[in-house]
Image 1 (cartoon, one colour):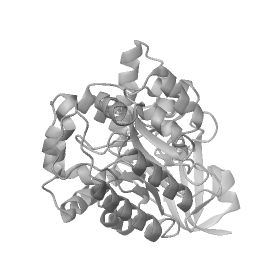
Image 2: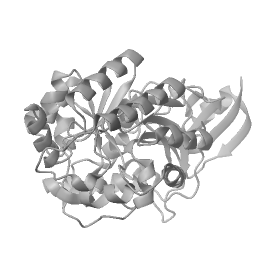
Image 3: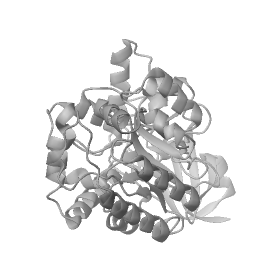
Length: 412
């Protein structure tokens, strides 16, 4: 068989098996958008020819990064509202700034964010924002793989009236408009462009939606056969608001509404109890870990270590992009902050962090059968990285995640 592309001679990091699955001198053969062969260079090149060859000697060939949780339109307020107390960061800091932007502003910011992310090796985006019916066009045009949803809430148009210690006055009309937009997104774009674009519903949080709205979202998600993105126990104020409105914690409320299953990707869980962390992890729902973002806006650390300890799936995300969208930065910080937390340098080792940005992130999005590792039959979403040129021994690649990106090839 003659393939379209053969990448050969590099360190092929397959992410197959329990670790990183490195082939020290490997090759990846591609036809169309599918991986046809992965293995030792000589073996693959003996079996196949190709129309195009890429010599990857001294480079790392690996799956593209999967960013499970981000709001690409937030690039418009990058580095704004920092160094504020977490309690007022949202309603007195970031939302008033976002409130003066127009749809075209968010779309332009999103495009910038996506391009920056691509340059750092991110090929799949869990994008969660509004107006997603406009932002999704960026993913279509730029060739990215994206799991997209609107961000549904019932917040009043004027958030200056919100006091987080008092019950937020929700506006059902706002919620219905945002839900309608999200449903339009699902109906028009789910599994479009050869499956490159898939859709979910996105209730902002249990604190920003009424119980009736959460019920309707769950019904539509089940009816349309799609998953759900949400923020879960991201703040102490979320717990307060949900208790005031329903008498339940956010986790208890979502459990009662049938949200806790494999189709749910919950971001943060920063202020969940250990029992709640275990409940969500064992339900099959996945956790989005965005260490940099939560450290900046809350000075806190989500319970990802505990979640994984209960058998839950954890994927990395960059969230609302405090400074930049770079998965290398996110991996490094996530590893370091957990080592610091435990006073133990063995916690979240590099190979584990790399999995959380690739195959385990793909699993969090229910896409592990098609992306996240290099295996015959999977989609050819991959990147080629130039490691540092300072005499690093090839065997050290298994322990290195912070490669300097000098060249990236993305095959969609």
